[in-house]
Image (cartoon, rainbow, N blue to C red; front, side, top):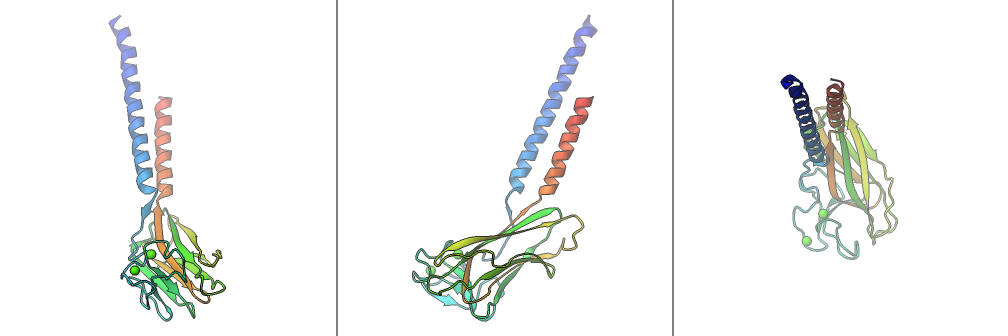
Length: 221
Ligand SMILES: [Ca+2]
Ligand SMILES: [Ca+2]
């Protein structure tokens, strides 16, 4: 009698324990997913706000970036963009000859990670037809992805350019420093608010898979 009563109680305790474990695992996964969903990769002077410029002032350097020729940092006046820069006060410009503006990041490409590079691409109101542009993501001397002028912003407009690259396990670029490059293809194109996000998606999928397998094993017992 005593033994018969004990057994279901023991089973119930085990079930409650299992449910608690699964709940904890799911909570941890949700936490990881949230933390990993928008991990920004550090870019120096990503919005070109260094240094602070006077209105309509342009300089032929881009702090934290490598540039040459007719390119630099610009605090646009109303003739170029009626509402100014889309982020902060300054933009970067690449003009005649389409000089490249680039930055090798301190972060390296990680395996099993999806990289998304975005930046705003703008067409000045006072330069006539749009000159075009190219944005590129590199690692260790290899170009991973490019936007070869897919967008055509109207005069005075900024559009968001986005490119993605997934570093698979065993990809030779893993461990190499990431690099961002962008340029105009004709007369002046301006850029602002450069962002690079890293999401280790497959790692999370693998974790979810392990979690499901653990639940299935427990169900089978
Ligand atoms: Ca800016
Ligand atoms: Ca200013």
